[in-house]
Length: 492
Ligand SMILES: Cc1cc2nc3c(=O)[nH]c(=O)nc-3n(C[C@H](O)[C@H](O)[C@H](O)COP(=O)(O)OP(=O)(O)OC[C@H]3O[C@@H](n4cnc5c(N)ncnc54)[C@H](O)[C@@H]3O)c2cc1C
Image (cartoon, rainbow, N blue to C red):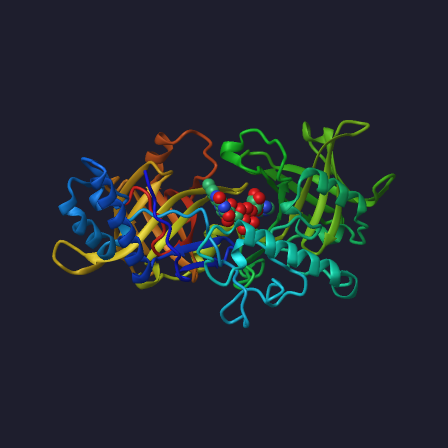
C-alpha cells in the first residue's frame, strides 16, 4: 500500500453556522487534482512494474485498474470527477490562519484572534498556508513562542481584562442550562437573590402569542413567558435518557384572588400537574429564598427552594420529607438558547416562518428531532440539489439518510407557504418545511394520527400532536452543514 501527500493551497473552508457549530467544506482545485493525479500515475505504474496484476485506487468510479494501459483513464477520472475521489488528511492546517487583516485571516501575528483582547490560538490551524512537510515541530514552536509572549505581557496587558459578556455554550450563573450538578449547587449557595415571589409570575395568557413569545434573530435566544422551562443539570442521571434526553419540566406561576403567588409544576412527558404555593423565607445556609410548597397528595411530601438570579433565570433545589432530604438541583429559564426549544416553541416558530426558495435549500442539511425535554443528536441528513426530472425539466431533488442506515430519495414540491417532501413511504408520511434564517430550516414529519400511534413505541417523546389538524408529527430543525460534504449512502 502506498499513498500520496500533496501540498495544497487554501481551498478548504471552515465556518460557523448560526447555531454555533462548525461547518467544514473542502474542494480541491485543479492544481491539487493535477498533483494527486500525477502521484497516482507514478504509484500505479510502479505497482505494475513490480508485478502487480491489479491496482486498487481510491476513486470510487474506478476502484480497480486491471492493467497499465488503463492508468490514463483513471487519471482522467480523478481530474474530471473529483467528487468520487476519497481523500483524507492527518495534517489539517490554516483553519485560523495568521494574517495582516481580519478580512482574510483570523489571527494577528501574535496568534491573537482579531476582535478579541485575550483569546489566542496556537496550533496547526494558525499556519498561513500548508507547510508542506510534517507539521508537528512547527506546531510546538508556535505554541512555545506564543506562550512565552503571553507570560511576558500578562501583568501589563491581560491580567486586568474583563471577561466577555457573550459566554458561548459555557456554564455560568446566567446560563445554567450548560452547567453540571456540582456547578449548579455552587451557584445556588453563592447567589444572593433580591427578587420576591412576584417576579415568578408568568404571562396571564394561556396560549403562546407575540405578547409572551419571541425569538431574537441575531442571538437565536427564545423568550417564552408562558412558563419557566426547568432543566436538569447536564450530568444528571435521569432515567430513560434515550427518549427524554436531559429530561425537564415547566413551572407556571400566577397570582390568586388572595394576592398569593401560586403555581403548577408539570414534568414533560408525564400527565402530572402539581399545584404549589410560593412564599418568601430566610433559610439557614441558603439565605433569602422562595419556598415552593406542593399542596396536594402525593406531591405535598416534596418542596422546592428557589433563588432568582435575574429576570429570566432561577436556580432551585428539590427536597423530600421533613426534615427535607435534598433530591436534586435544577435551573429554570424563560429565555433560553435555540437548542433548548420545546415542541410548543417549535410549533409557534413554524407558524411564524415563511417558505424557503428552492435555490436556498441546495446543500447538505443535518437534522435533529425536537422534544420538550431535549433535542436528539443529529440523526438524519438531507441533501438538496437541482437535477432534471424524467421529462427533462429542472427540479429540486432530495436524498435522505436516517441514522446512517435508512436511505432514499424524496419528491420535493414547492407549495404556497411551505416546501413539501414525499418519501418512499407512499404517502403515509410527508415533510413540511419552512425557513428560519440563512442556515436553519424548520420542519415537521407528518403522519396520520392512527397510523403512527400503532407503529411507534408508546410514549415516544418526540411525537407532537398538531393543535390544528387531526395529525401527529415529529418536529425537527435542519442546520446547513455545507454544500458537498461527505454524504453517506448517497444514491445514484
Ligand atoms: C496518524 C498520524 C500520524 C502523524 N504523524 C506525524 C509525524 O510523524 N510528524 C509530524 O510532524 N506530524 C504528524 N502528524 C500530524 C500531527 O500529529 C498534527 O499535525 C499535530 O498534532 C497537530 O497539533 P494541534 O495542536 O494542531 O492539534 P491536536 O494535536 O489534534 O490537538 C488538539 C487538541 O484539542 C483537543 N480538543 C478538541 N476539541 C476540544 C474541545 N472542544 N475542548 C477541549 N479540547 C478539545 C483534542 O483532544 C486535542 O488534544 C500525524 C498525525 C496523525 C493523525
